[in-house]
Every structure is written in C-alpha cells, then in structure tokens.
Length: 274
Image (cartoon, rainbow, N blue to C red; front, side, top):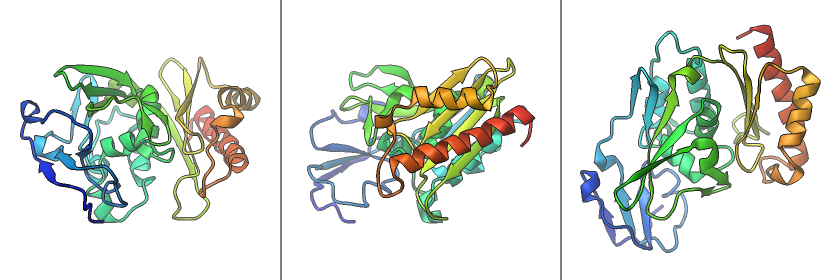
C-alpha cells in the first residue's frame, strides 16, 4: 500500500548518522506490516537495513540475531551440533505463515516489535531466554528480557526513539531439549495457540505460551511436572482476562487447546521423545 503521508525517507549508514527522533517518524525494517495498511500520522521513514547489520552470529556466548535479520535468513541458519534446540528455530520460523516474498522481507525485530500475540519470534525468544539489546536516543543502550519487552497486542516496553538492535539467545538455552506445538482454526490460519516446552541439563522445565494470550507467559518449574500439576500451574499463571480474543479464536477455545497442547509438549519432554 502506498503511504501518501510520507515526505522523507532517511537512509543512515551508521548509528552516528541516525536522525534525531521526532513525532511522525517510523522505523522501517522489512515493511511487510508497515506497507500493509494506512499509517496515519507518519511523515518520515528511517530505514534500518541501511545500517548494514550482519543478520546473525554464533559465538561461544550463544546466538546473536540482528533485528533486521529476515525470517528466511534465520531459517537457513545452521547451528552447532550441540544446539539441541536448533529445530525450534525452524519450527518458529514456519509458524509465520506467508509467501516466500514475506519470508524474505519480514524481520525478526519487526515481528517482535509489532507485538502481535501470534508473533512466533516472540515465542522463540521467550522460550530460549532471549535478551533484547536496545539502542536509546541519547546514544546509549539497555538490555531487557524479551519476556518483558512484549506487554500486549501491539504494545512493547520500547520508548519513543528506541531501536531494537538485536536479540541474544544464550548458549545454555540453545542446548535445551524442546517440544513445539501450534494450533490454528484453519490449516493456513494465524496461530490460535503456540506452546513450547523446554528442559535443560539440570532437569529444570519451562513452558512458554503465546498466541493464545495477550502477552507471552512463561512458567518455570524445577522439574518436569505431572499432568495435573502443569494444568494447575497454567490456571494460576493465566487469569481469564489474559486470554486473547479475536477472529482467530475465542478465549474459552484458546484456554482449552492450550491445555491440550501443553500436556502434549510436557509428555514429549517427559518421555524423551522428539
């Protein structure tokens, strides 16, 4: 869609060249959402890919994913053999349903910052202890767990003028075993519930719920629970008002299927299956 209100597109080649943030600005990454509907009040786009960030890097500390890394580039990433959670990366990428054009334009950072409940990059980052590195307008930076970055539908903890620079997934989290479950109302529909269970070397268990809830929910337990204990933990962690309600699923349906998917994921982790 043409954005008829745009009067300027800035293409900074470095952080020093970033223009001062002003009302009416918008960061432009892949633009798959920005150009999908009218954007009233936006007068200037600031192009982030022009900064030239490498899409991702694997280090001894873990995986660093640039905010401008596309979904397609992340899906092609080959992680070390020790990264037991490697399949989860591709599973979450494929949970973003779209054409190859969307996959090659949509970005990891854009998916996080749009903060839709069904955003699979949010699910991936929260399940694997992702930390967001944020550039502040004064030239500084701050770090924030991704589980605290997304506050609700299209609401984040980013202040005006802040930029999500990258997401860091620690090496220890990448070594976890994982179980992934996703459900939608139609075969190619937006996620109505997405559940990820993880198990680390110490036996600690975590369950991450997205898509079904207004913001990501993660339950951390010292060991793999029994079915009843997990159901009770879900009920305690997700009050009625936190279940999401839109055309892709009613709250009572989301609550029900989340319980089913959570039990499937728990059983897979408990049984050592893949």
